[in-house]
Amino acid sequence: MDGHAPRATTVRRIDVPESGELAQLAAVFEDLQYVLRCCEHLVTALGGPESGPVRVDADRRWSRPCGPAP
Image (cartoon, rainbow, N blue to C red; front, top):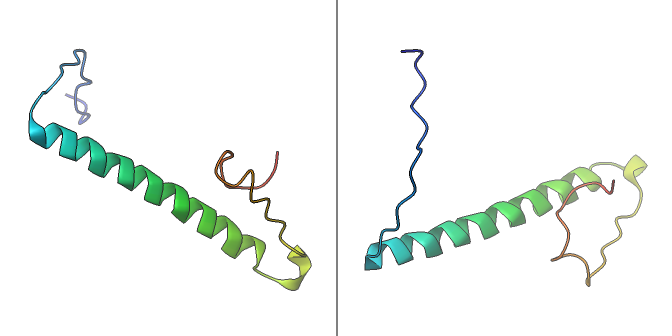
């Protein structure tokens, strides 16, 4: 064996109360990861005087991923 875990080939539904709670916690975790990426982007953008002003567009902040514009 090469030290890697085998990949799952089957997906099964688990219909117990705990699975719903786990899904909710996973969603909260993803939301917090998004907020963390946004904060990291802002810290980088505010890092020094050469970075200039940071433009925040309230309408697009939740609909676009954080990070530098393409």
